[in-house]
Length: 153
Image (cartoon, rainbow, N blue to C red; front, side):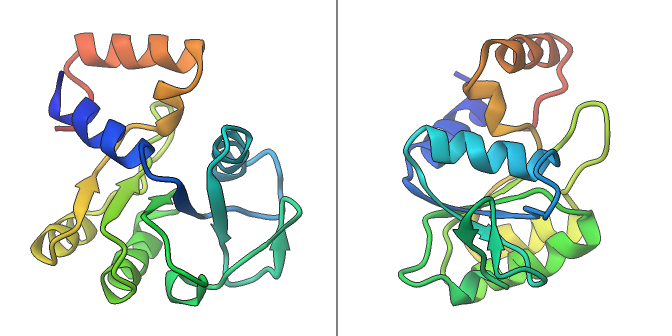
């Protein structure tokens, strides 16, 4: 099993997950992933400082405001926003951070956030997508990316 698989399985074994980047547009990538986690029985928390509710659930402006905290945060934002979210994760004692990467679009990862998170003891996944472990089409994409050496380490 690759390091990516090991880290992803550890992340996905948690049950309280925040998703940063959920928006009012329910067709956005973050929303689709948020709903996939929720549909699989995870207790998920949408992070968006500009909304009170998203996808029918209470939304939170940052990780520190989630009652009871979370076991991990999936970040589906632009890299410049990722930096602050990782700083928030350290402050809120969130041990795991997954920075989403859209194979055909942009990434949420930034060099600063990766380094800062690791220097502060976070488990950091700097790419890929949880959907690669949820549905057949994404599992196929994971296989192709793995064969091409394009999965995160």
